[in-house]
Image (cartoon, rainbow, N blue to C red; front, side, top):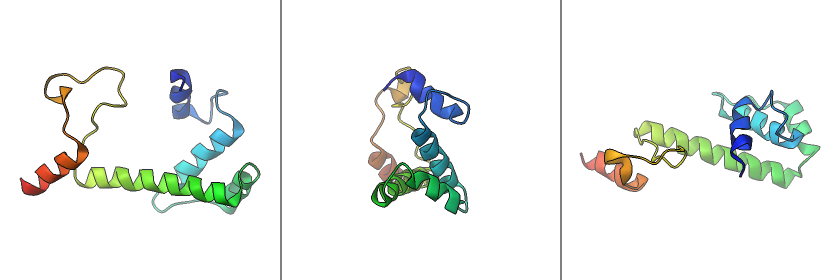
Length: 109
């Protein structure tokens, strides 16, 4: 995936690099991520102009899974392993333990 496209997601409302559907997916993710979730009927209708009910359900499931993963990681203070950063990890982070290993270590320690 193009790095400029990835960076455009941060400014999804203002960029012209994302399609209407991609912007709707970002809006949907943002609405689902709020606590409490604030997905409007209007947003669901706009999504349905591009996607089937099954596709909207699959998208919602993916977003919900990522939200659950993020909240789980925060609950156990599991830190990122550097996959998203452009620079390679250095020092103690050069060979990070798997997330499962971090969690087990925290629970034992």
